[in-house]
Length: 250
Image (tube, rainbow, N blue to C red; front, side, top):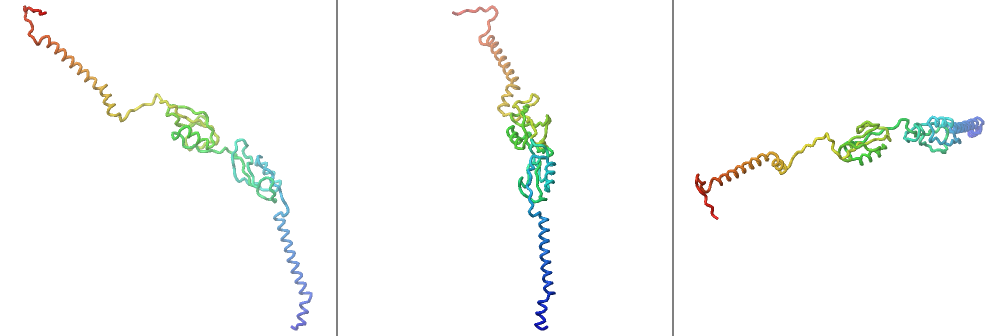
């Protein structure tokens, strides 16, 4: 190919037509991609997240659906003064601008009253320790019920008039009654004395079994005294014979 022919093809309409067609194709692809991306990401659109707190979850879902938002319940809490299913918290916060289709995560009030296990306080702690442990769990404490036993010692726990055991799950904020010892012994209780000291044992023996020996000794002494008395009257000087006269010496 001569240089003249090469320059003619370089400046020909066919070549420049192809180049122009390729450029137009690239431009169309870029524009189409941008339009599609803006449509998919809702570019330029913004929705203010509404305040969904303190309303029922059903109402919150209706409001979110109208705005094109998605609701997901991510957690539960418990506030006694609010109705079950009430929205407690939300993410994103109210007033945040988001795009359509954004997910809003909610924390709602528990539908069922949560339960807590009763701590190990029965026959294992004093009244003061038991009250502190129960209140830390959220329980309410009623007036204690005093029963015969060691003073201020916990012997049982009542819920709705029934005894409950350690580890049993009870509704949170339940009102419990603690059975506490009043420091007095029950009349039916028995007292057993063991390991009595030797000196006390000897004292008991003296006042018990040895009393017979003391009485025997007393009788023996009485007999001896009686004998001595008789001997004094009969012994010593010779007893006067019949008809003997006594001379009184002044």
